[in-house]
Length: 328
Image (cartoon, rainbow, N blue to C red; front, top):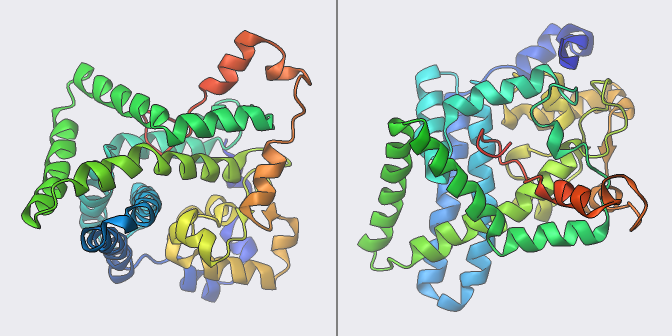
């Protein structure tokens, strides 16, 4: 039985409070999706206007691609919008397919993670169980991420699996949505924006911040069996929210406690829990740098998975999850 069953909503909130946090909104869900794509379009326009602003646009777009994945995650839970049809349409065609993912298999996979969070049968356990690691190991991972090695391997595996399993609808969705993005770039006279500012961030910066996000969520948590401490909430300042934690993904303990609360209601849920003193028993860290320091605190040559060449390769082989079945 998953640990989240040990927490009952009525033990945390009054009926009136539950009414404030539980209901998805078509307007808010759609607004989040439009915001993500609006930021991406604006960043591309910025570079089309002044090419030397490309590095800034690159980072902004990669961070907003993470935002698309986070909103897809809510759609997988069926809580992005109130309308199921709208939820699944947005989740598949505007959030999953453009990033070469698929909402339906991810939904099946991800719910297993919620049923068995940090337990032996958690499909995401491989992403957290090797921590803490050495700083050198973390550096090697970041180099593979920022140079596109991780992203290329993951996308190549995704395409190979899709062809092998004859998932023609998935492949068609990937090609159609990316053709639409390319077509929009061509129509504006800047075809090169697609490879440089869509595929480029997706294969590099996106992978870096996904790794950081995954580490923050479950690596080095204090107690795998405590629903208040087997995930982590990370306090994020405005810059961190823009670049590392879009759409309130940093409230991860809250999400695991009540996974049917939409992302745009998690800040309110956090405030209510804090007012009740519940956050004092939760795993809450003051920032992402604090989490990374903890996750990279293993001393070189201290044994464990750092103790041998083969074991080190196994530790390095764990790719960062991007909340899609092909990689996590």
